Image (tube, rainbow, N blue to C red; front, side, top):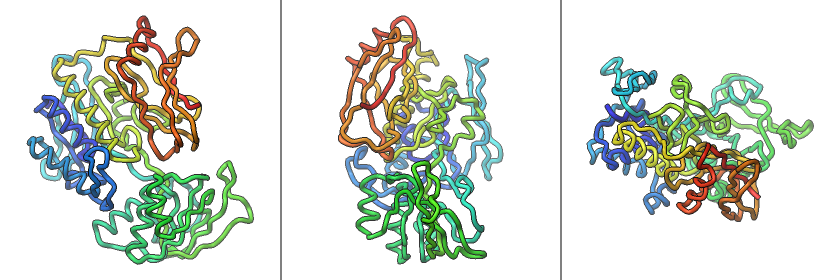
Length: 431
């Protein structure tokens, strides 16, 4: 097997299709769920595909387009199959250098040998244990994604009186969904002084539905023995600590947690892939290749995206790069010393974190705090001095929305000339 794709969600499918279209035919997609499509199968709301397909689609419709593309190309897939471990064998340069060990109820333990592996395992939700919220342990506390699956796929309502902690996009969408299903959604509480969701979701899911959003507010206690009876909320200060005297009891039988997503990288860490402590995903170059040669990462396993269209774009990059690697006989990138890419100022992180400088590329980033009327500035550090390579203006930048900073051929040529003799450093900041 030349390429093994771990994960059959929107990232894995887009990567597999891109690798096939780039000329690679010997590949497989391995998915632990019973069906391909990933988390999009339960996202029945619309708003997907406006950039990639130029059409507004629901989550299942978006996923089905990639499933259909994979089936049209007769790309092999294994569903209901869990990848247990990936091993790298650098001592086998002439043969398959990766072993992918899987477990399937129908086939037992399977080993695939591959030249390249694309990691696209997605992400998972933070749960109550991550928050260390005090109180009892009653029935009625769910992650927003679990509640979404229960309502949209299983036809089960988690409860009737709902409080939502966290204003991530899943929480906002579930606030509207629960209200449409007849629940009394009392409020959405957000510990930060700004929402973590997209502006369109705040408008459509909260403001249009008359659901209040309480910023700088969190849940400080949970009440109930068998079933959740209520929560105590409180305002927080600039250090996110509860302010004494602001506590208020809210009666509810359901608490939904929308408190962030974590890239699912147990396989990556076990493989000793170099990780980024800010994104929670692997460090990669512009091809999405990790620190392990021939191992690529894309989608939410790399960094959490705000819209799935960016997932498809990024995964296409990874799939095409993996196919090129196979076609070139696993030749290493030697045309340039490359450059490290660092975040500074209000830029929280960048992806990629390294560029080989072979082809034009884009830098994706998020800001740490909301910022109005500014610009992204990419600088090269040369002999202790800064040289501005490019700037990109923005009207407003917020942490919930990823920004794309393209580096064109002219700018790339300038960077190459600056870093011709040794690896350099690029710094992306805001002004």
